[in-house]
Image (tube, rainbow over all chains, first blue to last red; front, side):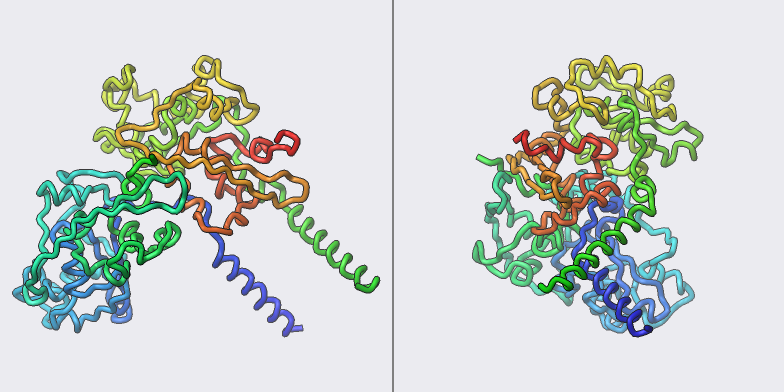
Length: 265
Length: 265
């Protein structure tokens, strides 16, 4: 009898799991608040080491640096937790430690070997998951004058850069290499698969300001030849291709017409 | 199949059916599905917003969808002005309204479309929203709805026909240009039950009011072969079509509007 109960339990569990795997939610997801858009939690080792997880807000860093500096030169992965950052790495000057080091450009030293009497207050600046920490920069005040855009963080970052509200650093001493500037200003016109949807205009110019070439090529978009990477809106919604950034940090995918800009002729 | 085996199979099917009926019948429909109470036409789609009002010593806000949808399509508020689709989940504050966000985008004390708008500018006008009365606006119902095509359910108005026939000309934009998609695909979805005609879904009459992103990908994930999830039990629980067609858009009592009888083809 017990065997049957166990068997039935196993089967029903398998059925439930398979339903869960293919089910779709059918309701609107809760959108993050502007200040929480682009917030990532890094907690590969923190909690195991007895510290709170690291909360990283993209908005403050992206107001000062290009995406490329961190995601190419310094080598942060594009998915939270995929980098596997350890305090020891940071102390050696890798990852956060590239700037947040003694004598570094950043305001404070991350994961220092020597803890002064400001411990654990200093740790809290990053290891703040589940804590109430008053940060130096308040989102609303900091971004008050920036050009606005709906959705996401509510800020038109591209315009903010163009109009000089923010100045982006694209070079970190000791990490970045001096190199000739590659210019690729080509605008691509991409045809949607669904009939009746406006064509997509992809601007290399707008993207290279932040990303150079290497954030996207060849990992996300393999080809330098148009049409070499085939993708669909479903995959983008799943966080692949354009969805690697748009939907998490860059403006979200709710804003159809920001990409599908060319009216159907 | 031998005769006996057939009998056993039949008995098995009957038993399974009886079990299903027993399970379903054990709960009344309203207990199984959290179906909103049927409201009079002049109250259908009216909501009470009380995220902060009562806490701040004000009466809750009454909002009437039918007053607004005569003049604005859903996308104006639910895309451009970033109102969520669930009551009390949008971070509406008096300060935000005063900054021209949410209600304050139009209700700012200035003239809008030739009409003097009330806003957070005149203390005598507070009561217009902060009245805690779900039936507020009832007195203008018959005048506002006169001349519009009738419908048996919901607001008693066939909004889709009203817009098709040009009897109402709701604004489709606030400041932004809407997506110029020309997407008219009508879907035919087979019903779960024998003898129920397939459901017809016209994209055309939906994009007259909505943006793609109001429904995709949160509510409908656009993946192939996932339409099987759109079962009535989930719709009645407020998922998929039920996100709007229980509360604001015509309610699901109107079976034939989606499942048109075969002879009417």
